[in-house]
Image (cartoon, rainbow, N blue to C red):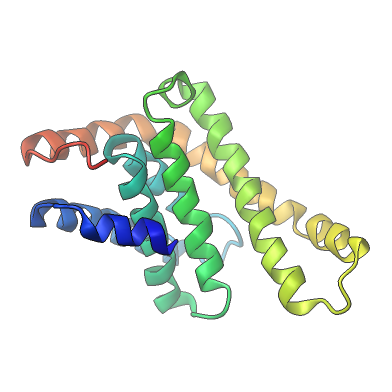
Length: 188
């Protein structure tokens, strides 16, 4: 995480571009709060994916990592926060890397991408949970943790699909409009 933040910090970026990235990070963070009562269902991952599809991988990473840090100010910080920052940052990073590929251009492929990241997010967070809380470590502990989280990961994956399907065309149009209106270049 640190190398990406460092690289982002050393780039020459206009203040309006930083503000735009911060606003998208804040939207991603605050969109998580109203859904807190429904485990693993939130539009945060969707906001990160569409942001990265327009702004690129580094900005996508920053939007994702910022979303985790800021939303946990409302929902609770803890030793899981850096792991969430990494997970959502990588969602943005990979979406930014694939933004010009057919994978994210096609709606169905975009939905598959969101579905896969719903499970990847959970699997990375499970890794943290097992390493931090299970003693002694064993393969059975890993299998049990991953099995116990299946429905939560499925809920996250399906909510990603739902939000991407319903909102990604309009959000992509809006973010691209802001990018064009304010002269925001591709922030790679």
